[in-house]
Length: 491
Picture 1 (tube, rainbow, N blue to C red):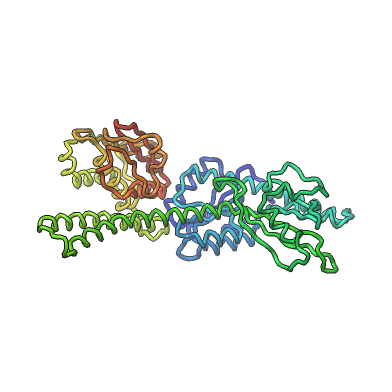
Picture 2 (cartoon, rainbow, N blue to C red):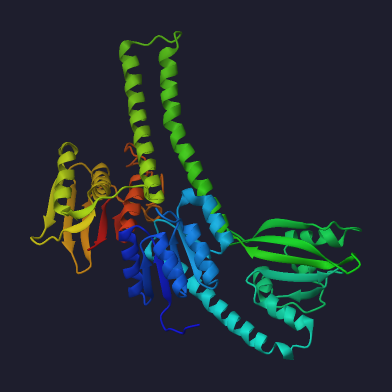
């Protein structure tokens, strides 16, 4: 295996902006990066030479990410592969992990999330290289190995899954370092009774065999949360170890880390629950209004009927906007958005958005200030996406502003970024609200925002668009004083 000072990373993604942005980010972090623009090129690159790490997009037009993963994994089993996916790809994320993916990376991801994932993957890569080196040394000295148990230990210790074997009296006869890690034990002494040291659910799996007069040749499996808050979730399988005559010799348990799969499961459940809750409220309100109108036992004046219908229209408008926002999020995540990348002027886009909101600005009496220099660079992006991004930010700056407040927009640039700052002097946010700002359906609730309408999806869309261009967003906010959103788009 070739030695090199920089970790070698392969990026396979058909989205040019994300691919090149990620490549530049990783090269700045000290990685040696190669990139493939589709699945076919990814297979060619990933099987021609061995990479330390590979980031593979799940959905590509020619060859899907699962196929690329299989081909690279077959050629170089020790390459640590990540599948870049989204909430909607829950089942595929599970399949990818079973095939050999180290983890999934939900898209869109932040630079910090990506770097942390790669660091974890590279740590495992180094362990695999060391284990392979150790195995090769053992193989070269195989003639010197005198006992079968030594050869067995060599195999068991190289496994990432935890393995523990107990005899029929509950004494440990074989284990590997991974088992100690998952069971949170510093050490196990051979022929020591260990059942009482194990998690109760794991002990129960073993006792299924040990406490029975007869045993069936089958396995028991159970998913167990070993550390709270889903920090460590494992799948534990117990199987009987028979004597040659068929009687019970002991029990083997295999412990597999499924923490990442459980996180995918939780994200899916949370998202479905939030969508169901948010859709239920406006539908129930409209149903209630219509029921009142149709109820002949309740006398309503024409003005009251018209008021109920107007309220229903407002709720349906809100519902339609929410559905459109959800479709936008889904398209971004599943990459079904058709982009037209071309040179665009951010000044022109900002001015056109301001024209749309001019009536709302005048109604609130806001003092508008747009500041930009003579040499604002053009940059390449999809005009509709950038328009949607800043429409959401400017709309929020108006809705959450104070009457007769200020709306300030500054456009500048650095060597690497076009920087757009949207500032208001309105409601602002409490620190605990700021932490949840970009979550789906989150809206800060206080006495100053109770009459402001919205879906809670706008800023989530903003974050996804910015991340898809490998950009970043910063937020400064003080409650009852105002907020500043600062967008960095790579040039």
